[in-house]
Image (cartoon, rainbow, N blue to C red; front, side):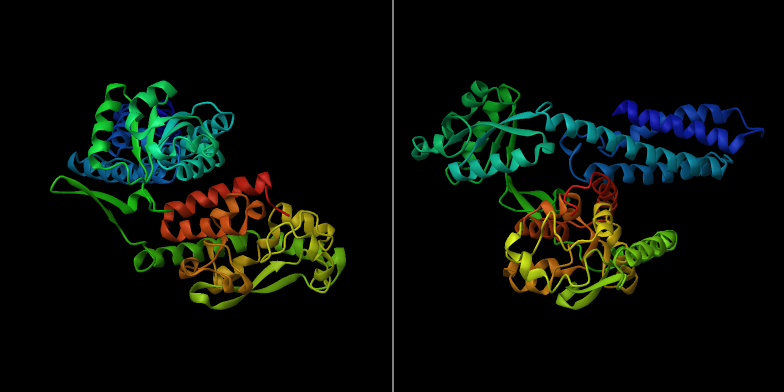
Length: 454
């Protein structure tokens, strides 16, 4: 990562030097500045905790710290130029700042992808000993097995004394002993991490003794919270008379942040609509020549606050698809609420291509400009879905639905209805502009891969 960060800054300074001073005279101190900037950049990243191991390679916090470092580099450069009365070329600084930030983000993203591929093969994993009740350990094991990119592999468990006899057949991993022997069990399992799940048998005194014992063998200790889908930047640990208290910030769903998101959506949607106008015309012509009939498909979806709106897509099915639904309903591969088939006979030839590359969703840019949708957000639900929502899932209706979202980059139609709702709820609880940018980048990768697009 250090090589990537220094390399990005060096390439940026070289590019800025060539682009700004090609054929022109320059002061010799620009050469020294070009060498100094990469060192300063790495120092700022370190001060912003951009190399903190616990935040690397998973989630958006790593990218947010890179962006904060870029802001500090910009402010520091301006202040240094003012104090030194140095007439630094603004074009040179602008190129350096933009390319350094972009190169660092892209480099870290590529490194993250390489690490995730390695973890998919079972390498570069942390060996975890899980402490808790048997059913909680079983859920954790299954969840971490599906989410291998976190780099945590459960290799064993310790359970309360009363569950030692029954646990081996239910947790899915070897049971090494009781909770009181966790430190010795961790060494026996070859674990480098101990994860404590919510368990009333493990009180504060036991946890403190466990931390002391694990310190001896340099084994990490992770205490899991019962809070679901709450990002780390909303959680602050505040000591109160020696007791660590967790303060949970409310989700940022209104005010200036919502205004920033709206401006970002409208601006980018207008640009994308203008750029993709030739694609619109080409797709419309293909749809019309393939089967005739209308080019657009209109469907009622539920937006923010439960308000219905008309969503636009390019038509990918035959015009009588709704009338033919009863003939294929028994072949539903999803759940009772939604109908999904990998090889739906109602899909047209052109529709299969449009769905494969998600081109059928381009008209939703119109919905973004109309204010009904966002570029990134929860999946736009059907009224039939909303009617079956449990009360807590209605929280996803607090924000506008999106053209893409966590559901889009996590499998699309391959997800269950419950998983798609859970991902939407996680997005609502932890939204930030950085999250939106990361999801947009991952969307391009998901479209290229085509997983769940049918």
